[in-house]
Length: 456
Ligand code: ADP
Image 1 (tube, rainbow, N blue to C red):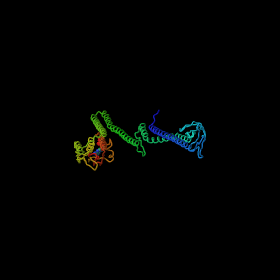
Image 2 (cartoon, helix red, strand yellow; image 1 turned 45 degrees about the vertical axis):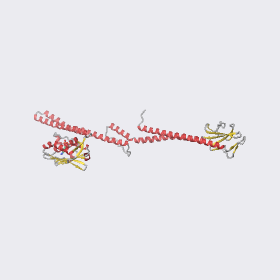
Image 3 (tube, helix red, strand yellow; image 1 turned 60 degrees about the vertical axis):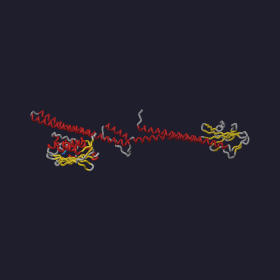
């Protein structure tokens, strides 16, 4: 048998509990009423029969019944019997056997085909040796009718009640489970269509656990889609970037092989070497980018002096700067401490300073300016180099983007990956990186980090 869904199980469970309660309450009510009826009939019988003796005298062998004596009182029919048990006065109800044996002070019941009676008899003996019986008969038909009606109401009401409970329960649980079925449908859609853009997109004001779960799933899908798209974009970027040097290598190799002139062959080989070096740089950078990406999930944060780190970077790159006679100016506020991943931050700052040297003019300068601005730590890396044209400014942080394509084509080590990595690192530290640049005047790259992370 097919297993019931959670909705059906919850509904069935509550319906069963309701049914049980309804049956218990109705049955208790039924039996209480029945007991009450018996109690009422017993006391009416006893009262009527005992009162009867106040109206009957037996001075000798005969009876004297007072004029106000009523043979039908409080729904009780009264009959008078002689000592030997023969009825002497009163009219028994239709269908009741008058000769039913008499038993003093005992409650009896008689059931005919269509009637039920309660019977109570009492015998009294007079001093003159005579005696008599008074019998009271109470018809249970109205009580039975009431109980019968109640039973019918129960038999109709309980199923209707349960049906209403089932429908209401199913509707409520169905509503509560809407997020679950939406989640399932979304998952099916993603699996079938291989489309990661589907979302559960729950609307409404109910902010319950399932609603929040659906929202969390949507956020999770956003993340998965983002990283999936990034991965796709990355793969296509890498293939695209490698295609250029590889096709140059192939064509140069073919060209060199087709020539006999050793000078031309040498030039071809030199060109092949440049492209291979460029590819090698790119692979190194890609590895570094991937390693950085991995470390970003697990930052190795420590408390250190950022000014000292900037100093260290400046020292490291001083040899490169000297080759172009570029002066590195340090304007470092000495007390600036941060809690950050030192290795990653160093990698970011090296990239910025190396770029400033690389794109700087001979005899120019690179300035590192580290200071605090309100709740931010600001590091400006400025140069008076080539600058960047405004149309490139918005894109230089994209992977593989180079404002000066001619350099890469010539086989230089510029891969267009450095600034993408800087951005990744800074953002992983809840910071931001921006650039201001004027062609032929110079550029300023600004890293801003939250100062909250530097005092603890
Ligand atoms: P790469 O330097 O390897 O090309 P980057 O991602 O570091 O890659 O830089 C992207 C591009 O931004 C560079 O190709 C260059 O055109 C431009 N750029 C970066 N820094 C500077 C700078 N200090 N001055 C001028 N242009 C720069």
